Structure formats: C-alpha cells, structure tokens
Amino acid sequence: MEITFITSNAGKVREAANYLEPLGVRVVQRHVPYPEIQADTLEEVARYGVEWLSRRIDGNFFIEDSGLFINALSGFPGVYSAYVYRTVGLKGVLKLMEDSDDRRASFRSVIAYWDGEPHVFKGEVRGEITRELRGSGGFGFDPIFKPEGFSKTFAEMSVEEKNRVSHRGAALRLFCRWLKENLK
Ligand code: ITT
Image 1: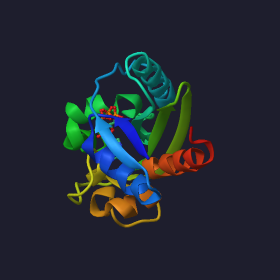
Image 2 (image 1 turned 135 degrees about the vertical axis):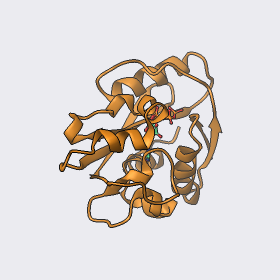
Image 3 (image 1 turned 60 degrees about the horizontal axis):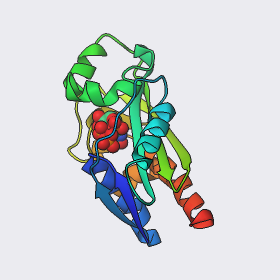
C-alpha cells in the first residue's frame, strides 16, 4: 500500500517512512503548500489544513502538525514553532531560556489523515531543553531537546530510537493501529 504525506519537511517523511515501511506501507512525499491558520491548538491547525487540502487533492493523504511547548515560556513557541525555528532559530530559543532553571518542555504531534473524512492521531513526549546544541541527526529543534529518562538529545539518536520515544512516533503508532483496522 502507498500513502501520501503532504509536507515540506523531509525529516518528518524519514520518520514516517521508518515507522510505516516495515508494515508494508510506502510513504510518498508531496509538497503542496496549505494554510496553517492561527489557532490555539495544533489539532485546529491540522484539521483546517486537511479539510482545505481535501478540496484540492484526490485520494487519501495525511499531514502532520507539530510543535515544541516550553513550560518556562508558557507553552511558546507551540503552534508558532515553525516560525520561531525559521527566525530566531535554536540559538535564539536557548537565549530566551538563558536565565531559566526550569528547562521542562514537550513536543506534540498531530497527524490528520483524510479518507473522505478527517481522522486525527496525537502524540506527546516530555523532556527538557538542553543548555547547548548537541548532536547532528534529526531536524528542527532536535539538538536542544532531551526526552525524559534519556541522556541523549533527539539529534543524538537514530531515527528508530527517536521514533520509539518521540511525539511523532506516538502519533504514528496510533495511526498505524487505526490503518490496520480500518483500511478502505
Ligand atoms: P510541514 O510542511 O509538514 O508543515 P514544517 O517543518 O513547517 O513542515 P510544522 O508546521 O509542523 O512543520 O512546524 C513544526 C516546527 O517544529 C518546525 O520548525 C519543525 O522543525 C519543528 N519540529 C517538529 N517536529 C520536530 C521534531 O520531531 N524534532 C525537532 N523539531 C521538530
């Protein structure tokens, strides 16, 4: 089976493929820009995106919206993560956190799959923001995020290791379980 993942982010595709391909699902990336509305939750952003795309694209597909929520910054950058990553970047986030001893943060992922109607799957991982960049793997904020119970940052993990503990891995696990039961 083949499944279309609409995203501009090759790192997300690598992780989805690593998870889904051993289960016989080939992941095909398509880059179709879609509006990411200003909303309070990732789920609202993902639901709007999938509905918008469904009016322009044939067949089944999924998108994924994710974000980094930092406790000391009251959940910022959260739904604004992509913008913050593009603008101030990792160093900017570390600078914002310079005087904070509360390093707690979480990553959240929302997958929205369209098969004539939307289906939403969510994942979350808690962890902390490191004091410096560590590792060269992964993408985005991976070099500054260390999941709870691990000494490595996501950027120091292999794709398999990251998928076992990450927000996206958790959402992919639920998505997979649903696909197995509901494949149309
Ligand atoms: P899309 O085309 O799929 O929207 P994107 O990179 O713009 O790709 P989002 O809109 O979901 O993704 O924005 C999420 C931001 O958070 C983005 O800057 C990512 O780099 C970052 N991010 C998401 N998941 C991450 C992860 O697992 N590790 C590190 N950074 C992550």
